[in-house]
Length: 331
Ligand SMILES: NC(=O)c1ccc[n+]([C@@H]2O[C@H](COP(=O)([O-])OP(=O)(O)OC[C@H]3O[C@@H](n4cnc5c(N)ncnc54)[C@H](OP(=O)(O)O)[C@@H]3O)[C@@H](O)[C@H]2O)c1
Image 1 (cartoon, rainbow, N blue to C red):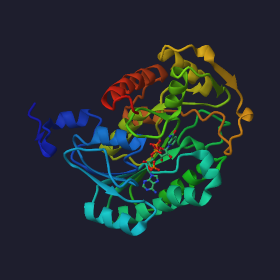
Image 2: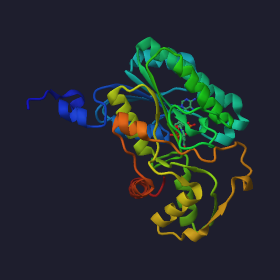
Image 3: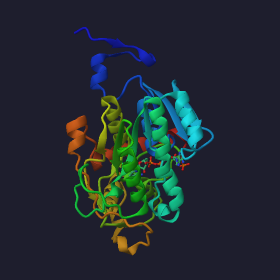
Image 4: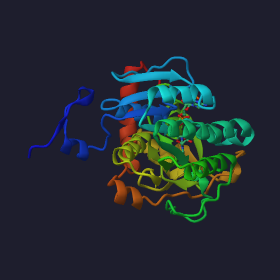
């Protein structure tokens, strides 16, 4: 069949290839928080066939790419942010920047609100000026964890300040009048250079260092390989989907059982992990006990199936080995 052939960005693809692939093509996409775990995965997946503008706090970037440009911008600073967006005119803005330390958010409430909520207002103002579609990342912490599995339409009831800030950002978006998508995710893990350690990093580092671990067995959810989340977001951009989407790994498991599976994947003795209760920890923020997602919508709307725990951990292990080789043992 004589399908059209696209040659933008130096990549040749037929119209059929473009449709079948899960990645958008020849868009100009601005990613906030591009040095974070999700930001780097998005850069990795989107930069071969799209123009990427990355924003983060650091003065320099270690990211590269033929059509990649980096701007050191704090998204709470509205003037430089809006100027950069007007100058670069992205078709999509993906907001991954956030204060993600949920206990810190209980203490540093002003900072949390400025980054997680007020900066979203800046992004909306800028998106409207250039007609961009805003994709915003939210969290399972908008739920209280008492009635899983959670669908996109289920009532929200955040327990802590981080969850409240994420819900406030969702509410601002809902009434904003600009095209937008809210992507809720949870327990993100993955491999990328120079990121803060995630749950899987923490368990592997401790076990391979010969230590023991105490992990809660009364918090349950879907661990999410960041590569899967980035793939789901790429698909949302490709199909220009709006509304709310739950994107997580396909399997629900307690943190304790997840840690045991991590141990087994890395050839360590799972008996070195002891179960404890959330009440044994002195955590500042209250967490949902079970925020398992219902993933029917991403399958029906996006035809997207993320990894289960075994698939995600095996990919994590493969990438961790590669990164250790590439970065000389540094993560
Ligand atoms: N991690 C999880 O388990 C989880 C669960 C549910 C939802 N989420 C959501 O998923 C998204 C991505 O999470 P992630 O784990 O990839 O986060 P991350 O690794 O912490 O990355 C966030 C990035 O944003 C940057 N940033 C922070 N404040 C900024 C500001 N004011 N202006 C510009 N950049 C700023 C951070 O820089 P610094 O490192 O220098 O601060 C970091 O590079 C977030 O919206 C998060 O709330 C995450």
